[in-house]
Image (cartoon, rainbow, N blue to C red; front, top):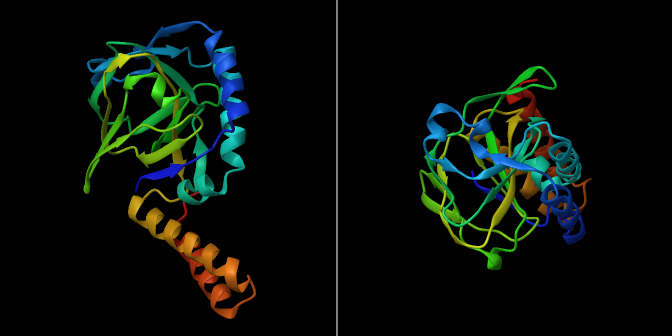
Length: 227
């Protein structure tokens, strides 16, 4: 399931994030790569746990927590602290699959990567190339979004970042352990939640059919959720 979350950050919030990260020191992006990814990856990245990464990441996580579309689609249990990368001309990231587990050093816990997320922080007109290319059972999808827009996709997907030929691509990326690990079940819950919201906006929450559907949603979530 691919879900676009438009306007996760406002223009002002995105500018604030850029102000924090643009003034920081950047390092080789392979600092956080697995053995497979290191062979395919060429970019710059903020050091994980740096003061700039933490400050900018806190702004991103605050935006995630208040966004109903993200919460409905991801059903987050744990969000990995957001990381930040920069691609310049000649940089890219070849085909890879994200590691199934990530270790949160500061919290001292492991996180299962059910979902991957990319938050775009550069005007798409300011650079050429840099598309996030995701392969799934429905084909190949090229994603290049506006500043402050986010794309969610299964971390199990083969994906890549097309080489940059002009300008710079700047983004935040992170992973989510969902309360519901199975993508198909999570997609069903997401579709049901959106349908309930549409019905409620016209008929009101007290409509008996909406109450019944909401009960079905909650009981499915109760059945499938892992805490």
